[in-house]
Amino acid sequence: MVNAGYAQSLYWANETTYGSAATVNQNLGIVQSINPTETNNLIKVRTLGGTRDYNNVIAGKFEISGTFDYYLQGGAFIRQAIGEDTASTATVDSGPKIHTGASYLHVMGSAASPTVDNFPSFTLELSDEEDTGALATTTNLNRTYTGCRVNSLSMSATIDEPVSMSVDWLAQGVTVSTAGATVVAADTKDPYVFYQGAVYATSGTVNAYTAMDTTSMIAEVNSFDLSVNNNAEATWYISGTTNIYQTLRGAKHIIPKGRDYDSSLNLHFSNKTMYQRFLGSESATQAQSSLTKYQVVFDFVRTGTIGSSPKLVTDDYIRIVCANCAFDTMNMPGAVEDIVNENIGVDLQSAKIYLVDADASYE
Image (cartoon, rainbow, N blue to C red):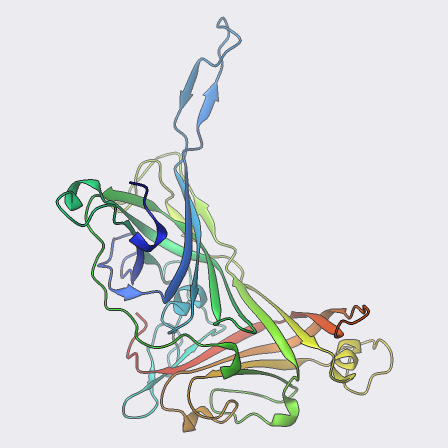
């Protein structure tokens, strides 16, 4: 029988030692797809005195990469892309700050992002349940990827869609078994959806507890996209492995390098303010020699008032503050019987992500 996607499951766990398989215990969210790729990087060789055909085909480095997409229910996995949870006074993995008696504030995106040795990694379990009956222990395909790190993560919200997360990842190794999927409790919360959010642009400072002024709200937003790219690179060495968590042909490290952020907005044309901001300031009438920088803020709240201070929210709150933003591209096409759209590319220096939820630890 051919297997189907609904017979698959995807769970993960934070690794306490890089590359050492952790006990899978967390949901990603409402998973929509996963696409892992393993490559043997076969080496084809010819020889003097041989024929025109290859003399041999041998195994090269064993490379693992992949993507997966899910709808956002909780924020724990975001730490894997950003690197730390710095809600208290320490800078690296200090853990959440008590927000109320039953909820916690998490802050990610510190300039003191962890170095390679401290950057989080995760174990990923992808299970194909090909039989849950008598053959369950012999026909299932259970793949456990270890030493995984996020290369890039993008978050997008579009009208009539839940908030979507798309992840590009690299892994150090994989093991295969016929075990059934690990039993992990499902998240019972609804995913965040587009109407629970708002987008703001302000030249003022914004932090976890800033109440947003409605005059800074960007009107008529149809969609947005925000991505972080860790520019991760896998390394291999001629001496093979010197670590019990490494395999002979597998990657020895997945190294996060410089961090890039990108964002884009699509909105219906409401007034000329966004175009003037693109030119350089809200009062600009032509391209300016210097650009006013803005904080672009994305707020999502399941309950309560969007844009209010998170001090008033006990749970289910996400705020993303994009710092020192400049509007890089502006596209405003026109066509008969079409609403005028503005497509805006945004470049930003850094971003901080604030989450309030009932999760006492993202580690």
